[in-house]
Length: 192
Image 1: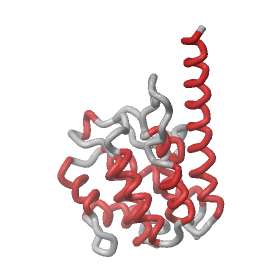
Image 2: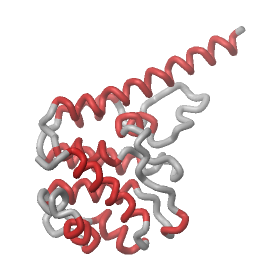
Image 3: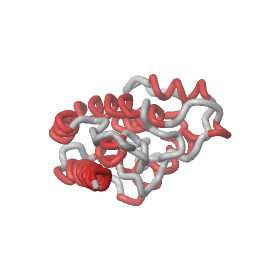
Image 4: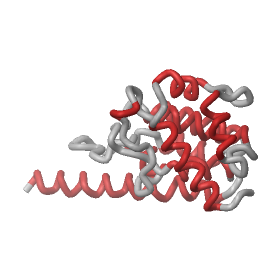
């Protein structure tokens, strides 16, 4: 297992590279098949041989998920994807919309059963389920709102760890609980 700092730096560097890619190469990374890769992936693997270059299969899945979450359009108009304060679990709950749920009753974008299946998954199945989750939240994610890309990396690099499940569940349920409490408070205030 590579050093924690090396993985963290590689994930953030990959997010920065994706932010600057033209639409065509970024779309190629979104469609990238594990095994074959894409030009952008191979460039990252060459730049980060101790992390991305060493565990290419898992990093292909990580980069594909990050590419899916990177906003479409011209690079100059994109906001940074990486935001260390926006934990992946919270983004799975609110769909990448910091204003969620608004005035509506809170309903997580990624349902609790889907989160449970993601947490319980092991090996390659976790990459499949996290890719599906990314595709689900890309429609609600606000382009100015990022996600902690380091979380994405560790969830896939250490899929058999109970720690990675906790790293998803704790922020997810904190975000859901906070939204439910705010909604109850707002409803009680409206009744008075």
